[in-house]
Image (cartoon, rainbow, N blue to C red; front, side, top):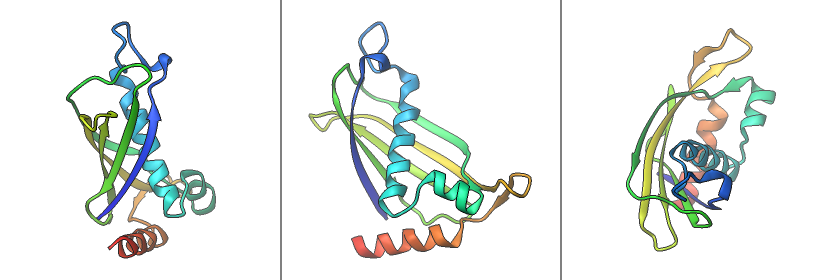
Length: 140
């Protein structure tokens, strides 16, 4: 439906004693990927929160660790939206090394809440839904 690629380099501070990217850093990579995907269609988390009062907390995350990333590896974070969001939005992420080997995959489900209304769940805001639809149509 919608795909976005972004490259990041594994920093020394992100590695463990074995020289591998620490397993806990991958959710940060997922956040970078989804934030930049939204930015690519004209949205930022900050804008959604400040201008519209909508926040998107993570509801669930499913991760598969296949191969390790190492210090100084250049990674490609591929973020996909496979379904149009309704009450939640699920990002599917794949992380590849420079050899295009799949290192890691995940799905991250976020929900929409209204910070001005006791953090109550809401449906996907129309402006975001429309922007996703427009991006999908432009890439078709």
